[in-house]
Length: 485
Image 1 (cartoon, rainbow, N blue to C red):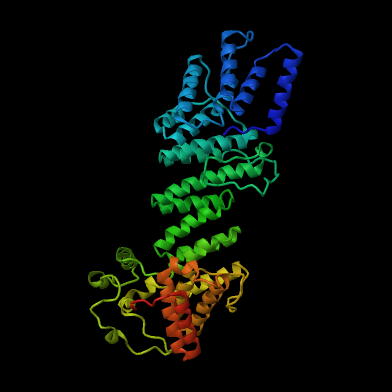
Image 2: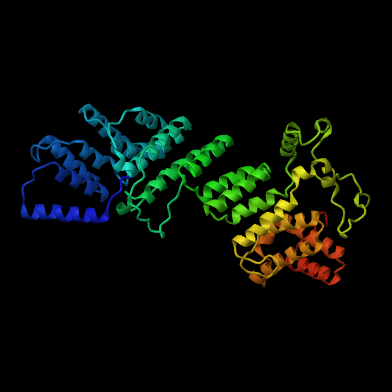
């Protein structure tokens, strides 16, 4: 996007009006080029094109359209349709026919518009055509903007080699010396080519790093989408250690989502530590993934992959691979009374059979200690007090509470199971005193499991009063226990 300065445009309008009122002579084509640029910005294309045609026809004197004329025409902030692209392409062909070599300021808006509309062949042709703009180190932010846009076009074609080439070229430029910070009230999205920075800050170090970070994270995202996680981690390390540029929270969340789905708990710990080192505070989404990844039971296909990987790594015996069959859940043919076994020392019921069947891979699937560790870190991050169930600084959602209650159940800590249930019930009742909380309907299954674990914990602690409160809350919220009619 060609960056316009509102102040500069106002001054241009004043100068044009002054010249016309005084009927002063025009001595160069720059005046008409600025008229074209101003009309384009004001969405008065007909007037802009008329000025260009008059220049070519000699009506305005011995002035012909030059590269600056075409730069003003192509940088149209209002162009968005296929008809606009066709018209600009006509002007592009006309420019080449006159022997005027295109620069990046001409190619960039065409690439952006073609990519937006989906004209990938045109994007490819523009990328392959050589440009003649020679940018020095004093134009490093300009280079960052232009090279980032080209890389985004390569990414649109899933050409990561071309995108990496643009990134490597960008890193050869010196960091700008202007250390002014961009206004903190304006957000700047990363992972996108549509970054708009105020004109007066376009040559700052802050702007340069925004473009560099955007390019890094755009390539990282495609690597993760294509399951090329090793290359994504290499680029992340290069970003943090080579140019000392911390990734955004959004980029970290991509890695968190990928590893949480695959239960790579050690990787999640590494990412959590990286975020703290870089001063990037994990948000609720990140902590939900951190905590639930430790306790959820994966589906059979994913569980099979976990077992195979553990066998290849020597963590499980090879004999397990031939006999192991992932459990889909409790066997409906087993009588519930027959399924129960002696309670554990804590008084809690025995671990359900569909989980007990995974005894040999229990440590591979469930990580209660890690779950609690992430949970404690979340309270520290949000300045909350974990021992106070009525603390309002940190309000965990249903998925987090369900996973933590499962973790404390496995660790045989019934009193802590009750504490987390009380925390959830208290805050939901406080926020929605006269109706069932919306969170109940949205997460009916995990909430039902939370009530079941809370009842088991109250029985284990012989707390009949708390058990009665739990039953009352079930009636108020209309919650049914799992497998209940």
